[in-house]
Amino acid sequence: MRLGFTTGSCAAAASKAAVYMLLTGKEKSRISITTPKGIVFDAELVDISRSETEVSCAVIKDGGDDPDVTTGAHIFSTVSLLPEKGEAYVEIVGGIGVGVVTAPGLDQKVGEAAINHVPRDMIKKEVLELCSLCDYKGGIRVEISVPEGEALASKTFNPRLGIKGGISILGTSGIVEPMSSQALLDTIRVELRQKKALGYSVAAVSPGNYGLDFMKESFGYDLDKSVKCSNFIGDTIDMAYELGFRKMLITGHIGKLIKVSGGIMNTHSREGDCRMELLAAAAVKNGASLDVVSKILDATVTEEGIRLIEEDGRRQETMDYILERILFFLEKRAGEGMEIGCILYSKMFGLLSKSRNADQLLAEAKEQGR
Image 1 (cartoon, rainbow, N blue to C red):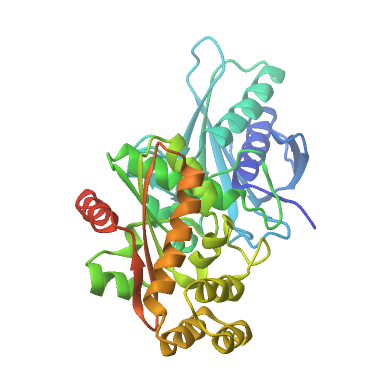
Image 2: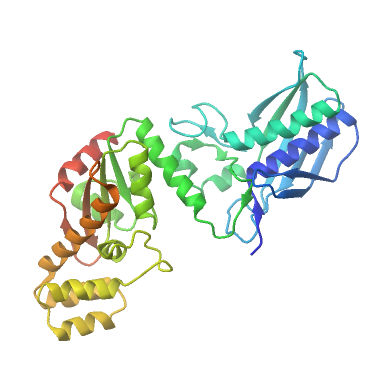
């Protein structure tokens, strides 16, 4: 599958080209940079605008075969000269369509443009190398902008993270690997780190917003305030512990969390499924008839399986057993240093089971979110 290049790589390439044109007076239609991964990015330049004191150009973001919402965005760099200070230096700012950090715990400080440290380092490296080649000892002001950025930001995690007004300029390797899970893991870590910086003691985690209405109506809790861990249950526990959390509350639908009852810590279907098998095994353990178990195995969704168990009169003990197994594997992953609670629900039946400490952890989570 085809690799892509990050917004950080696009910003660095556009900045290198703009500085080249500013310092040499020559126009450039393509430019190459070497990404931190060691892969060369040969970028085409568009929308070039030149004057004696300022040059602007853009690189169109190409995410390769990865479904990246920023693919097609124009990553602009506008550069101008700053006073001499004895040696070359670079000032990087964000322009239109680049978000501004408004909450702590992110890569950049509150009030700074959401241009992460690796892209900043990439831009500085490329600009300073050109300054050296051109024997220029003054300053260069670099403004990164993305005209489509504000509209695109609504499709990213930025609003949840407290990044306002546009997208982030991101990338640690400089490349985008198709269907890579790393971007999601990085986002989960950022959300957890931000909660920790805000003083949260309980990491409230959910695979997603499925069950949003149930949690609001039954517990008065806005599920949207929890950290969305997607399928990465185990990795999220690891990251939360590394960041200093010693309490975690996981809330989720039976269709996702039942996989954890079998020790599956990445709940994506390509990593492992066994939903109906695990549900059937739990039903057998709690006295369900072979006829019911056979029907569960023929069912396609857990909601239907639970309905069959309900009709057999064994729902509560079966759900409590499933929760017990979920907690066993969650606690095994976390180790002795973290207290974990869990709330398990379904669309059809509502609350299925909850751990003894769930109410207390939820109360703490609700209080810290105010």
